Length: 236
Image (cartoon, rainbow, N blue to C red; front, side, top):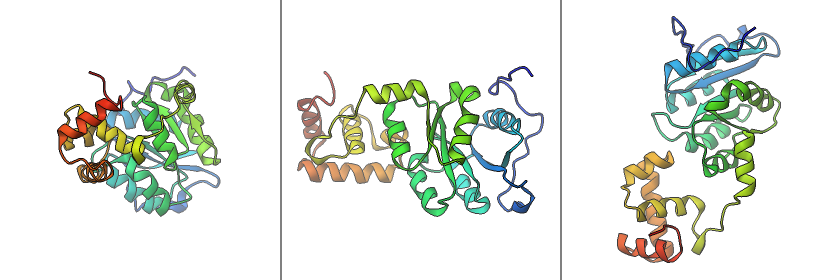
């Protein structure tokens, strides 16, 4: 059978599965999947790829973070395939919440984000897989199977970058996320822009900013910029 390019194929009719569906209809041993991505054409292609596996069953499709959480609570799937950039909140912040609420559901992140920091945080917060969308045809099925078996999967190219670029120790007791926020503050971004870039809520960014100012005993943006320059967090 010829390989299908899952990102150029759209189903003629989209049929999202609601969270109150009949869980008992699953075949014994089936790997039950909730698929979360905010683009219908991407979900259609991914579903085509996953449905080609005889023991996979996509039980629900979500287009935002809140729906993903709701469908996981309703279906208790084996695996949640989760896009990082969706409406309704931060997917990264949702990972530990979902793991607490449904500990038997493993999470595979599917994203365009190739920065090692995102993979490091997602895996550190409880995801078992991190797949780049550009490699989904080759890697998603394996990642889902590994997650269902309790094993991890990381895009090999990204894994090599993680191994070669160990995270620097954060200065002055700042967390890695606080360093990220500080760097963007120093570059002139607003709280809303930082939230969008880091897939956080604005409230979370505001909290990080407050903690940064308390730890560094700095109050103004100018002081934060000066600190970031002195520590080499941004380049002139």
